[in-house]
Length: 490
Ligand code: ADP
Ligand code: GLC
Image 1 (tube, rainbow, N blue to C red):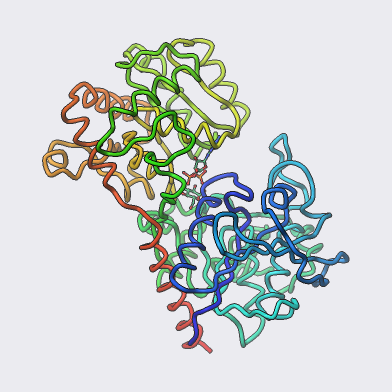
Image 2: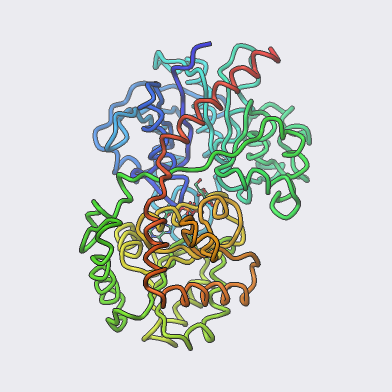
């Protein structure tokens, strides 16, 4: 069976539009697959920001999709920095507006998200049947997260179809909508069934992917196992267990062309594992940026992320009074829940010499934190993969992480045995409690005070290789499996 044409369906992709790690993955996995000599094309909504960041675009076709009055255009361009073809789904009433891809500037979900991602899925469906006037037919359609969950469901409506793969980047975001909303979408009524996409009285976009895709994966092996348990399954664990023969985990990679301290244009001083002393200048630069005292010896802890319950920022807030009795500084970059934003701002006012935060989204600052901090903290309650700890390894900014999801697959604890065997790359702790977090930071601080050991662990961390090539090969194998399972069931 031919495996040449792959349609990669995503709701965000760096550098066109980004809210989190999915954009990083969608911006780097397709080029990695292309370099394995496949014709992979990216499709995403033509949000206003995506059009602005895409460079030259050309309208390739325009057509109507089932259930909607307006026509949809396909704007073709290239993913900046690569040869990968990008198709933007141009439906101005749905996508041409200010604000984010899923929510307005105040962080409120767009009220028409169900319609927006149905138009998107219907467009993908047309392309999959080669009925969109593009003269291109995918062998595999690779969907990501709830925003493209409808696609595998729609594609099972015909016999001769491409294979489908569904990647779960985060099971907690499910795309749940009411019965009334479902009625406005003009979808096959058979989808409203507990064996299809109905979920406790609501319509669940993510179930479309989980129930109907030929193969399902998550973004780390550990998370693939975790989501079949009640603690992580978000109510979908039994369904996922029933599909466990189709469920695997493939660890995300890091795009080292973007995240490499030896060639990072955002850093004051570039460095590598053999010139780690140059990192000190980035630290001074970061302290100055955040108006913290420029103290070279004081350990500096960085955090970056969406300010949501998942990331465990509240655990950090809980230990701050105790933590700050130590000689330590903390810098935070993030945006999200207003209450967390407010609590962080309050902490910066209470401890101006030790805590600083930038509330907002700032790509350059994210790089400067990776380059300037000594340690990187990720106390996540759950973490499907996590990318910042992988970047931190390469930047010699030792990650302190909870043993969950992809964090457990990527960081090796600096216990005595692992230090001796030169495998240690960070600090790993078990419980999502303030005490466990404080103990972990204390272990990191103790290690920091032993410069010889500290440097040894930094050296190991910087040698780790999570480049995309290996994961891209695993995705190709997954596509092949998806093709062979439809053949068996056809
Ligand atoms: P998630 O996808 O759950 O948000 P990941 O660790 O996989 O978590 O990816 C987060 C990505 O988003 C990283 O590239 C990180 O640097 C970036 N990021 C998150 N918040 C911000 C922010 N406020 N400013 C800049 N980059 C951010
Ligand atoms: C999600 C997860 C994160 C993962 C990212 C990319 O947003 O929260 O852990 O790294 O997707 O797969």
